[in-house]
Length: 84
Image (cartoon, rainbow, N blue to C red; front, side, top):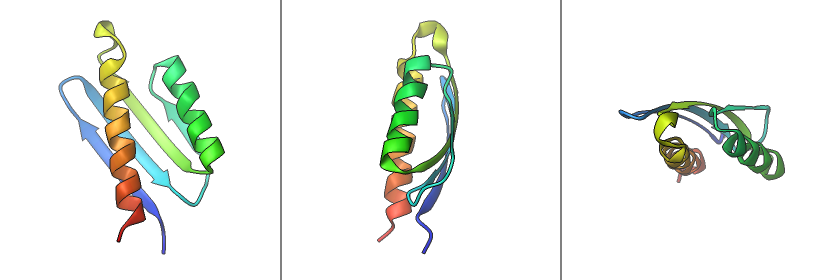
């Protein structure tokens, strides 16, 4: 059984596309927020999780919308990938 998920989220402030594979794989991460990219790369590498993530957000007001929506998407993806 494949433990993968794809999540797409679009709000007024952000657009997030995520593909997650709990059983590993390559990771490409681009949120346009340097520290967030770094932390997500570490999360994927040390968790042995495959993650393709692209996020664009309203960075003029800060990175909080991007960070928040990426976190929501990762939570939804993990929940979906685990299934029953």
